[in-house]
Amino acid sequence: MAFLTDRKRASGMGSAKSGTHHFWSMKVSSVALLFLVPMFILTFGGILGSNYAEVMAYFARPFPAIVAALTILVGFKHFNDGAQVLIEDYVHGFMQKILIILLTCLSYGAAAVGIFAIAKLAL
Image 1 (tube, rainbow, N blue to C red):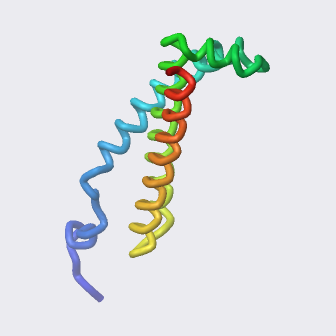
Image 2 (image 1 turned 90 degrees about the horizontal axis):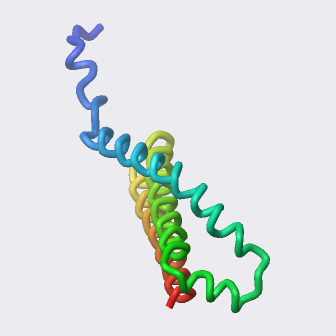
């Protein structure tokens, strides 16, 4: 029987020093998406089903292009933060680090492709 204090029992089980940052990052991106997604639906919904030339002309205007790019960027950042928390909770050891790196590459790569596509349409 080990006689450990509460502090010794909790040693190594505490904060990783980044939980507050993840929490606020998720909250800020959630609130941003709360405004961006309806704006994206309203701006994109009007052009849905149009031909290529009309879509090109529509996204040549700055407001729809900026709303679409911000929605993609904030959406993938929110996805990355949320999926990273899931990986940290359920995967441990070396595989955790590999999955977080792959997830970050995937989400930033997908965001870059989406923003490139919007820029290609807008310019």
